[in-house]
Length: 283
Image (tube, rainbow, N blue to C red; front, side, top):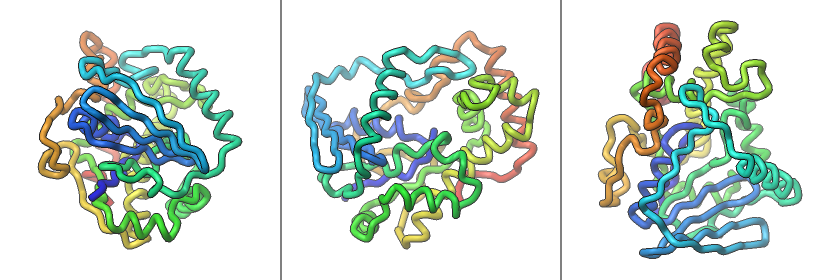
């Protein structure tokens, strides 16, 4: 049975991709105008790019010793995003303007794992002030068709959540990036100037956005299972035997020697926890 992972921004998607790759399990990123499927042989990674009426296939050698931590422009250790990365994003946006919506996820089957709503992140839905706003955004994507809903109901749907709020808040503060504000990537400056702005940012990333994902499943009567990102065992849930380091995709891998900047972010996270008192991130 296919697993469908309903993780919001910074809720374990990258780690699960690495876990799938280590076990040579296929996975698919389901986005607005396309889907990208990764499958594996012993020594090859095969990528399928699915668009409305087009499929593009590429393959490359697998190098299990090479791993790239995705942590550009974080606060604690700021690494400028490479120019080629910006160019790739810009070119994709230009191409997406001429592509229709990708709605038939069954075109990607078989796939051991699907990341639903993969392109939905903080910047995409920051304009949403309520679940109704989020629902309108999802309706515009055209993903929740009757055919897709019936397929999803027969999959193993996983909703991740965080119990260690301090860890999650620090990570999300570290990844703050909003070029449309005067703060840019400086979450400490944002906290000093407008604490409520930071609280709203954390409320959205820790609670509102992941809970809207969960409410979407409830709305369509889709059964799901919780996955505790802090305590649950990946093998017991997914059944894939090869384990990977639990912190391999955590930004703390780049925090060595940066105690001063880390402590500034940690203090903000601790202040937020005193403010919110909400507990874990489940609905």
